[in-house]
Image (cartoon, rainbow, N blue to C red; front, side):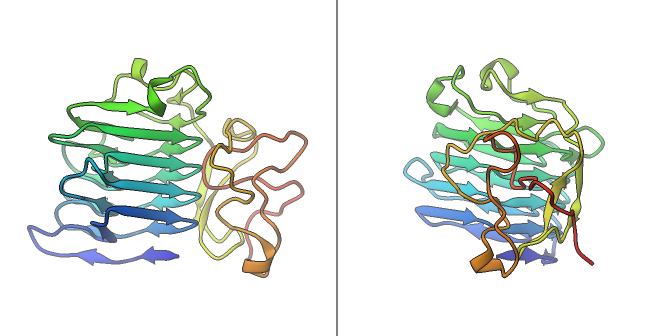
Length: 249
């Protein structure tokens, strides 16, 4: 699915692209881009009251270039269980306060987050970068086992880096291409030559393909999650394919 170029207008506007209030929510193999809100949450707001019993799973997806005049440019979730796998959150913007990229939290309930092989970069609040922020009482990442492989790349975060998985790459340029048609049914951000994200992720989610999918669905080629000389996934929604030509006319 692609959700793009939508706008929420007005001085109390919310949710330029998508608002989810279900108990169990899933976003998979999708691109949510270039949406805006005149107030909060230009991209996606996942809000369940109470959030303690709710679950959000985002996999093989791209949230990019969304904008909020106030807070929450990219993805906000208060789901008590929030899981992100092999996804790219980039180039989202807010103007004040909280995260422009990934924002987790709820005023009363703790959030248990699973973050595996995600690329969260180039999100800005005004001028400063703000890729990952947490509000609320507490956040536990990956069950509290910070020594286990997680393989995320995060640009700038207000969350204490000591509380992130030990192998988190912080403030490293991933050499990310523009959002465009790189094959498949949805636009993606390609990883350019010598990106540190190449062969540096994991696929604990168990997907056989990247966001672009398999040939029987796309009518293109199989965009496998493992490609190249090593059987190691790339970080983010996009997997560099061996002998692939990036982009199409």
